[in-house]
Amino acid sequence: MIHPSVLADEFSQRWERIRKSMLQQGADAMLVTDNVNLYYVSGRVFSGYCYLPADREPLFFVRRPVGLDGDNIVYIRKPEEIGDYLREQGLPFPQTLMLENDSITHNEFLRYEAIFKPATIKNGTAVLRSVRSIKTPYEIGQIRRSGILHAEVYAKIPSLYKKGMTDLDLSVEIERESRLLGSLGIFRIFGQSMEIFMGSVIAGDNADNPSPYDFAMGGAGLDDSLPVGCNGTMLEERMSVMVDLGGNFTGYMTDMTRTFAIGDLQELAYKAHETSIEIQRSIAEAARPGVPAKDLYNMAIEIAQEAGLGDYFMGHRQKAGFIGHGIGIEINESPVLAPRSRDILAEGMVFALEPKFVIPETGAVGIENTFAVTADGIEKLTLCEEQILPLG
Image (cartoon, rainbow, N blue to C red; front, side, top):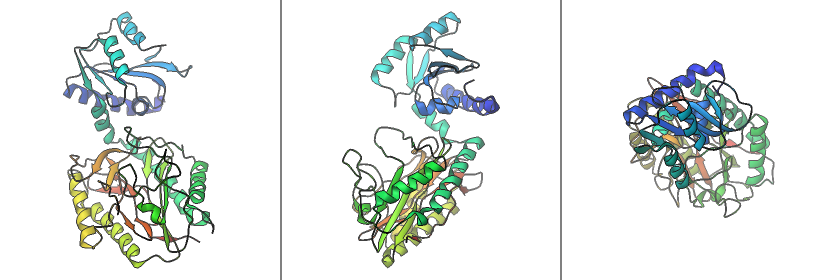
């Protein structure tokens, strides 16, 4: 095995869940190549492939790094040697093969097709994302650990602020504290529609700058090549500062947002922030296995509108189309709390809930926390002060 032997049962459980889903799709093998999925099935990132048959132990075909040893590890120089190995061992080739069609290139698809020559190729991306959406107790433990360290960083934010700072200055200090506590610094994202660094520090009206991404507030960014997040805004009186940096300390992430203020904000901002907390409270009471994710979205919209804050909820000039998203190895997993979501909450899911508001001439307010779905409700994994806290 590539993973530590102490976790053998954990990975056997993951393989079995993937096999079960494969068989439901009529597939007899899957080839895993994406870093995120390799980490999920093996416990580490490596250059190579995991070949997972529906009826046998997986084989790990490794190009780099050298020096890995253990059961089922085979060193190769190119993927064609996978076919050679199967023939040498007298192992059958799959008739229906699953590939990660959402993340491999067309040339890679053609190459794997030529190697295995299956009668049918099916897209395994959805299978892997569905299996990964239900976290094991071990995975939730890793997310909980990230949440503890994430909260520890956020507790230091008021002391990091110095008069005369820009949003970039404050962001750098928060990022530094995160790295000192062991943040891995990388935040993996599914798909090619979004790029971000460690997260965002959004000050004042920069929150109302539209982003190319589906965010409640994007921020102009420091350059058109990465148009999101802080833009050099000077931190000034009567301005809100929203900190939305991811917490990746274990390979499994938490997402958390807290709002800070320089001086007093306008009353509308405080009302919106309290409404954000009310939305979280109401959803926490309603969420449990079997609840459609879209129902939670609709609940949030209704509360915001009843408070007279619909124009500011999940963005002002440009609105986000969701109020929450699954999280784990990647920042955007299932379930998605959106109006047309087909996701149904299930025990073991983990999601970030982020009811936020953008108030013109003040900035963004609201909170975000990471929750695990339990047998009879949800558990908050990011625990720190939720009220607007003063800076300076």
